[in-house]
Image (cartoon, rainbow, N blue to C red; front, side):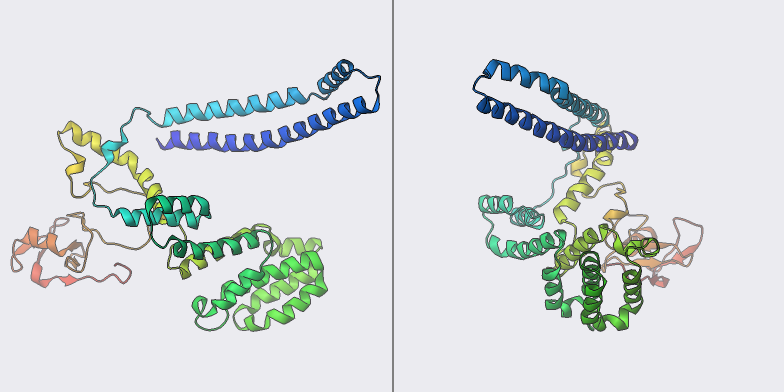
Amino acid sequence: MSIALDAALDEAGKVIKKQKTCDSKVSVCIDQLIDAVSNARASLLADPNLSTEVAMQQLSKKLDEMGVMKEMNSQVKDLHSSVNKLSKALDRTFDSQLDICKALRDAPMDEATINQVIAEHFYREGRFEIGDVFAREAGIPHADALKQPYIAMHEILSQIKSGQLDSALQWAVDNQAKLSSDGPSAFEFKLHSLNFIRILKHQGQQSALMYSKKHFQRFQKRHMRHIQRLMGCMLYYGKPLGECMYGDLLRPSAWEEVAQEFAKQACSLLGQAYESPLAVCVAAGAAALPALLKLAAVMERSSQDLRACEQVPIDLELGPEFVFHSIFACPVSREQSSSLNPPMLLPCNHVLCEQSVLKIAKSRTRIFKCPYCPMEARADNLRQLVFPDVE
C-alpha cells in the first residue's frame, strides 16, 4: 500500500508540474494568437482592397508557420496523458469497491461543536465566504465573533506575503506582553531583521544602517550575535563573499518562514493550534483507515463486529506528526493511564497500570509474578510512577 501510494504521489507531482508548464506555454500561445488576429483585423481596416477571405488565408498561413495551434494541442495532450497516468496509479492504490463504512464506529457527537469546528476551519484558511454560508446554514450563533480574529490575521499575512511588515511589527508591539514576559519578543526581532534585509536590497547600505540604529538597540542583550551577522551582511552585500557567508539571511524563503511563524503566534494568542483541528482529524483518520479496514475484515471472518468494541483492540501507529503530548499505555490492558489508574513500578522495573496489577494479583497482599519476567512482587509494595510530561 505504501509503495503504491508513493507512486501515486509521484504521479500527482508530475501532473502539477505539467499543469504549470501547460498553463505557461498555452498562455504564450494564446497571446500570440490574439496578436495575430489583431494584426489581421488591422490589415483589413487599413486596406479596403483586402478581402476578408484573403485576410483569413493569410492569418491561417501565419498561424501554421508559428505553430501556435500545434503547440497548444501538444501541451494539452501531454497534460491529459499525465492525468491518465495519475488516474491509473490511484486505481492501483485504492480499491473503489472497498466499503470504508465497515471501519466506522458509533461515537457520541456534539453536532453544534462539530459545526463550529468546521466553520472555524474555513475562517482559519481564509475562506470567509464559504465559512459565512456554512455558518448561516448550520445556524451557528455569533459567527462574526468567531470570524473576526481570523480576518485580522489574514490581512497581516497578506501584507507579509506582499513584502510589507509594518502591520506585523505593530501587531508584535501590541502583543509584546503576551509574546514575551521580559522585553521585546524574538518574533519582533525576526521581523525587524527581515525588514533590514529588504531595505538593504532595495534602498542600499545607508538606509539599512539608519534602520538598524533606530530599531536594533532594544535587542542587543539577547540577539547581539545575530545583529553582528546582519552588519556583516550589510558590509559585504553584493559581493561574492557576502553571498557565500550570509546566504541564509538573503534567501527568499525567509518571507514564507516569517508568515508561518506569524500564523503560529497569532493562533497561539487565539488559544488555537497552528494546525487546523479538522484537518488533523481527517489526516489521522486517513492514516488509520487501512489498518481499521483490515481489522474489520479479520473480525468479520471471526463473526465479530468492530463497531461493537468499546476500544480499538490494536495499536494504530499514526506517525510522529500526530503525537502532541506524551501518554503511558499499560502493556497488559492497552489502556491509557490516568489519575484513577496510574502507572505502577514493579521491582523488576517493568511498569503496569494499577488496575492491571490488581487483576493479576487478585489482592493487594497477594504475591504475583510479573507478566514479563519471573520476578515476584506484591501490589501493596509497588511505587507509583510519575511522568512529568504525561497528562
